[in-house]
Picture 1 (cartoon, rainbow, N blue to C red):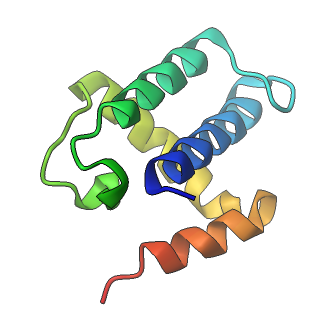
Picture 2: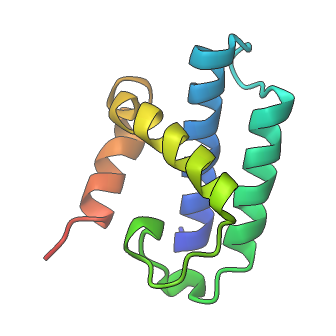
Length: 102
């Protein structure tokens, strides 16, 4: 799977997990705030100048998120990241290997 598609699927899983646990939505649903973050993240990934050669956003030299959205996505990732191993173990393992530093 191309890197951008993988990132898009992973980020929506992280946002849904966050929203379900923090905002009490049903599995697979998003509240209005989390939906806005998801739409923004998907849009930013579509416009990523690195395309399928993209690394992790954390290691990127270009910060394409607005500061307020960067704070929101950082909060979501900090919450969901450690929980991915419980809710999406396959994705968590793939993520660890894809982003392993040499």
